[in-house]
Picture 1: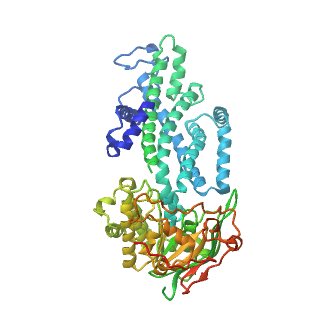
Picture 2: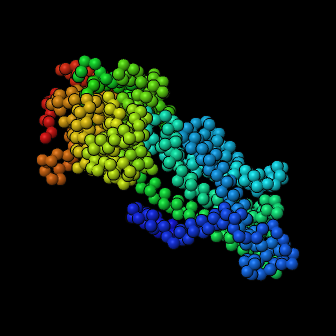
Picture 3: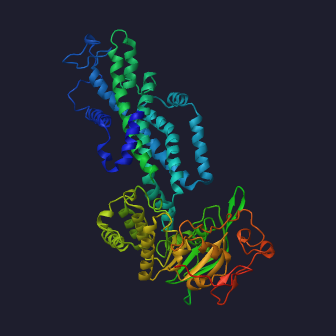
Length: 290
Length: 331
């Protein structure tokens, strides 16, 4: 990773015009994998695959075959279709939760970074409180209280992501808001709203988006961990995390049942991290060169 | 001077609270600029030039305290509400900043920045705003203005960026343009081009201009009046020809002497002004230039000279021992 970033930074400085073509094979491989996962997740219902909930007790832990490409799990359910339906849940939670963080945290960070003052201090303080709370305990407590559902899981993971997004947005806004182009905009008669939306937001959105991709990766892992612990999505819906959790029981007989969802998750998380890192490396040198 | 001033700065005083105490950045400054006139404000770094320009625009840092009046076109900007002020800025009052690297938004194209300003103030539709943007870019001497609209600031050179910044400032035909060291961040070869451009556009639009600089050479041929600032105060003020013919303030003389001369022998030691400007958080009792002044006597250290008139009311200086000898105008 470190070498990749260095290469990109150098190239971005020396050959800004060719930036688009110099993203590297790994980046494009990650993009291809992401498109593939998104495609199968979106079209899961129309794909010619078995019902992920249909059990076949005679075919438990069946090996790879023409009927079950990736075999079956401990209850005789088709592993491939469970992986694909699992991707839906993992991606849904993984994308929606950081989206909450991005919008709420981004807005709070932008406002507190631009206006500062007492309200800004209050927002930062509130976020510090949220950060100081042990996240897993909070998730456990809230899930136990409001019940296990995809919506609840997404909401709580989203709220937990707000402070991090807020900090990224605020830090960027703080450095930008005293730049001359903001004063220049004010000198040209721009209102606060205009400065925030047209001058600052386009500058803040790039680092925020790069952070969002990293946030997706983290959320997929967190959702997986929660599902592994049995606190994620309620059965019979499968997510990659719950599949790993179920596969654990037959680790000695059929280790692939735990490994396949783990590999799917690993590749997806790696892809999001790679793309996020590349985008960050691309936005960094340009900001530094100003 | 014209009969009626477009801008008059009256007894403006800017205080900045700092951890080390109160900093008086601008100390009771009086200035006037008539319509179509150019005022040069000269002084070394940290003498309050930029704070004065920010005070005129009402763009001071939030903690700064401003006293006095800034009359612009019959209105006192200091007491104006935010909304009316916002309408005035850009349309009647515009500013060009020192560093074109930071005064343009790095992630928006030149076109977006120009077109949006035009749409905001002149309520033009997109096509008209676009057409006018191209005209403006052409007017400030940018080749292939059509293509430039889609470029980002980092794709342009420093001189080009400053031209774009000037185009944006000129976009709404302001009555007064404040150029805050517009050439300091640029190459010497580009400096003259930018200054000539400003002068040309000013004449064409009959707009008033305040040219802020640390270089007396810059104001020499391009201004109608010059105000020399030192430690937040105006220490000499005169019509440009009068100032260069017969400067009264030792500081002005020292500033002029510090400009390298082309006809000087190689390796001539440049007569720099020794010492540094006084610490603005610790005001000194006497003339603020006295610690560095070679003419200073006991009175200079104990008493602050007020601005007094020379031969004409337009020429004012703050010194107890003005230079009487005419000084040669630099080539």
